Length: 352
Length: 270
Image 1 (cartoon, rainbow over the protein chains, first blue to last red):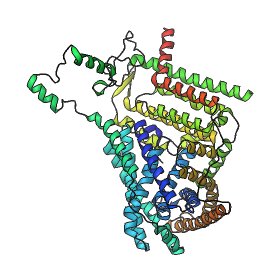
Image 2: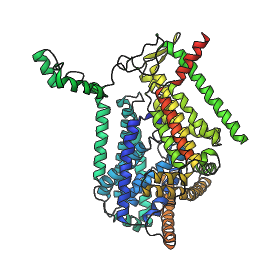
Image 3: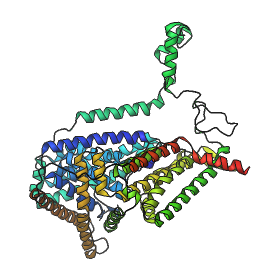
Image 4: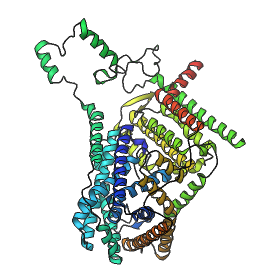
């Protein structure tokens, strides 16, 4: 179950798409540099393997419910972070396209939550540090558990942040966190166990596979593009969401001016260059005072005599009883029209 | 995740649907992808209390499905299966947002229910359209379109490889699953130990298969450079499709058409 488009706003979706696209481009470039062309079919087939493995369940002993593999960690262990990220991205894309498991706009978020955290954070900094270059089953288990639990916690927290910033769901941040984190702790423990079990099997049956994968150098992958993308995210978040909390109180300069002269701004002279420039600025400012201009007519007039409502004076949300009935009638008419168009098209199409 | 055999059936059905010949199937893939993205962004950009303004958008999936000869009940089933995530997060809205915004006589409807309805409508619109896009385009054309729209070559080639080998591996996985279920009683044999051995075996076979594939690619001249064939070009009809629908989406986004229609209708009745 991945994030759906219904709970995302374009700002959040677009931002995460930008970040994911940058990460994908970076991973692609890194793979070309490594020039191991065995990776190409290997990534494809391992992606299909994870897909198939996700569809087979196992029963969890204490609970009696069933669990399945996530895959990010196993891919990272076998392929290295960059190839694993692209493989996870492809798996999530196919899931979104063919199984409607996750929306298309939310795909950027999903790839980030389920690809970036396991492949670029948990794998190099947790699994590799714990299991080292010559793992034993004990270290594999410890590394897998720690890495999976932390990767899933980070991914779940990512979901919470993205949903909260989109503002479509009413779930308060605190409640959402308390819901998501414990569930994903349990899922992380299961994922860690499964990953450890499969990796240990491979270690016993064919240890050279793990050795070959482990010889790939894993330096901290922090590309410039990633940093820039991160800064972009922070900017959008600060400009978009945090501006809601911007104080309405006067800033320092205005406050001190008010204290001294009784006004928060200087009066501009009525004549001369100041006045011309002032008028010019008024005409060009599309967002005067960081808000929408007053007096702009929005949508259609209300039933109260057709007076246009200003964007600022309009009560939000602007729902009144009078518009409700006509709204319902209009909605019904729209749906009926759409249905008629559909039927008509079908008849026309099957005749031709 | 769905059971392994039902998912397999899904993939072949989608594959078959994408090979039909209808006006929608004949559109250039990039155009379809771009139009669908504009649609999704438009739908998702409404604020949370809008319900009636979302409804005209249903025209786009209706046109795709009818002109594309897609089976409506099958798609509706898939949308329904994908519902849980949006439903279980949206269902909290009525609990947290109780301020009554609309009244029908004595009955008051809170903002929470309105935003919940909005979430469900958004969900239906976006998921149905995405499925219609995939069913009318097919994986190969879709990946080529993504490649020409700027997606990194490594990722589009990976998607194509994944798709190709999905059928093979799901086949193997479902054989293993059936073998296990024939040999297990109740919950015996379905635990982690057997599972890890099964999946481990599947993984080792997968790695061997990857080596064979790589050898086969080398025999056919693979030199490390990934290439995709270019086949389709954008025509007048495609540009008309994109511009027409984008204009329609803008119109539907800016103006609340059902409210207008309703006002006119109720005005006429009075």
